[in-house]
Image (cartoon, rainbow, N blue to C red; front, side, top):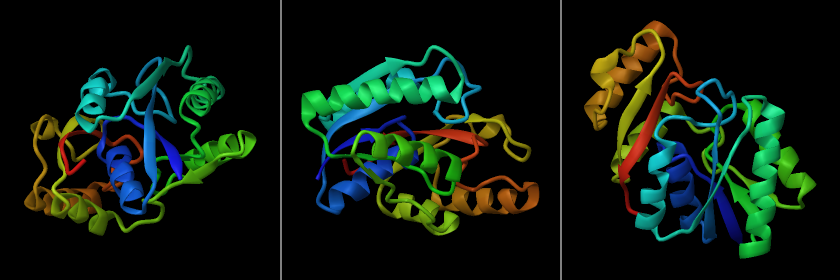
Length: 197
């Protein structure tokens, strides 16, 4: 299937592309919606301006749009515009995204895909957090933590390339402080430096 990928440059969106390609899908383009600020509940904010370098490295064209407000409805409108553009330009049939456990995100993306008669694909949906984090390292995904905003995560994590030992430490901290190990709630943001794709 020809897919567009919602792309933030972080581990989840990048790994979802990797899995979708392994499933035989063709990623025709990356869709990056730049949120107005870091207050967005739907979109990744940190380091979005570097995604063009990842796009070039993966040799997948990128379409971008800026959201005019942090309101979810406005962000969905921006995503709809860029999806329609990708349908016209690349004849996409579906959207792949990196949602893991956020029912809020999943419903928003599925509703939009249904409206546009597109298939919504979420390869990471309901994966086990610890298994997934270890799988990233085993799959040669090299990523850093680019922002932290949770108790238990201090600035010593910033810019750090995450290893299997770090995953164990993060798991312990997530148990102690109650944050999501995958950072899906914005507890931290990641940026992929290198990976098989």
